[in-house]
Image (cartoon, rainbow, N blue to C red; front, side, top):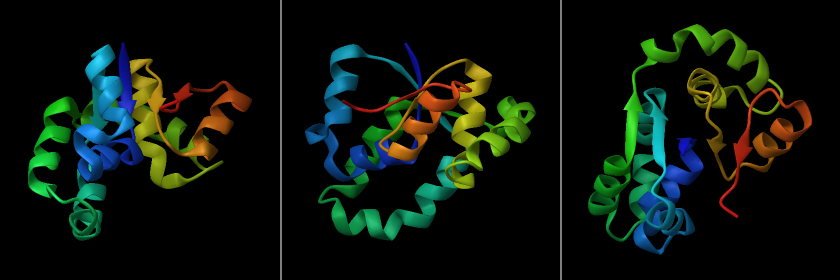
Length: 131
């Protein structure tokens, strides 16, 4: 199964590693995980905060990045405008994740309730939570 991983899920792996619910799901179901290139900038932006919360930051970051396919912007550029309109309903910062999900025809795996609720209400894309 293809899933676009948003930052909340990715960061949970960086902070909690093998103890995170997300990691347990990955271990049990072995999904194909995708992460938009812009997610790298968000990771860099929050790096110092993540380092404070993660006891093994470098090792867990390595694990997290080894689990995902980082997809270049050029691959989903054509979906950015549509995704921006959709994400405007809950958070424009999520535009790259929605664009990649639209491009791949895959759900967004997220911990953000607003994204999940909007996906169910609008049916413009699909979002799943860890539960």
